[in-house]
Image 1 (cartoon, rainbow, N blue to C red):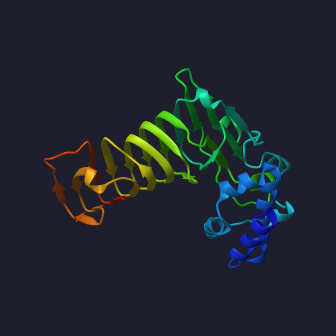
Image 2: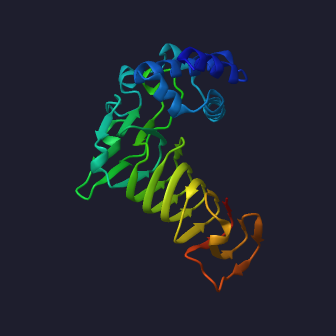
Image 3: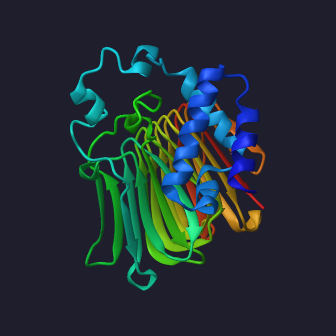
Amino acid sequence: MTREEYLNELKSSIMSLTSDEQAEAIQYYSDYFDEADDDEKVMRELGTPEELAKTIIEKFANALVDTKNASGEGESEEEKTSASTDGCSIDALYYEFKKSEVRNLSLDFGAAEVALIEGDKYCVETRGLPEESLNCYLNKEGSLVVSNAHRFNLNFWSHNRRSRIVPRILITIPSGASIEKLRIAVGAGKLVSKKLSVTCSSGNIDVGAGNLVLDGVFGGKINMRCGMGNLEFKGSITGQVNLDCGMGSMNLNLKGEANSYSYDAKVGLGDFRFNGEKKSGVCQVYNNQKLANHFSVNCGMGSVNIDVK
């Protein structure tokens, strides 16, 4: 699909918006393609036009656009130039790391829109973020650390040119990457991966009130916690695994044999499902014959769903 075809399909999918809103969204993503200068990578990052359209419509539904600023009226020169970034530069940032040097991944975001895609090397790219808001480095233990130091300004849609850049982080992971430890933490933001092929020996995944979708992570023991947000995981998990869910939602679609897994579950007012078998209400389930692959599940008022196929 070419850039033009992508944008045409996108426009067809946001016809429910006003003409001004459509024009603003299409202009933004046209600029986004120009700035990235890699159409194929941008399309992998953003997903299908239909998927992107849903995000655009949701943002417009939750944003009040000040049309007075379209002509710059009521806006000081300082506001025009700073674009609500307190004078910080929001030029695109780029970091690149050798595959052979990365042994662990540590990703920690308080409020950000993060996309993980597959490529031929480790690299981190940003749009719309001040350099002071991002930590990105490889430590002496071989851990690639990417985190935000400050809460981002999430005023996505604005008629000011520079503040129209959606704060996003794009992380590329090499195809077939193998790491020792994987750590991912998402506070109130959103992290979504396109289909990956990453293996890890162990890991920890923590979601607060945000949204995390991982597709294509194959690991050993990966403990998971979800507070009020949403966690979706596709891949594999082995060993003794702890799953803790408060008021949120956890959905695990795992590759494997169902009869090679056992589980214990403590359920409050929520519900727990394992391959269609449902436990809900206040209950406790103990397994006297724990297998090598075992889930220890604590579910409060949320829901935990595990499918092994």
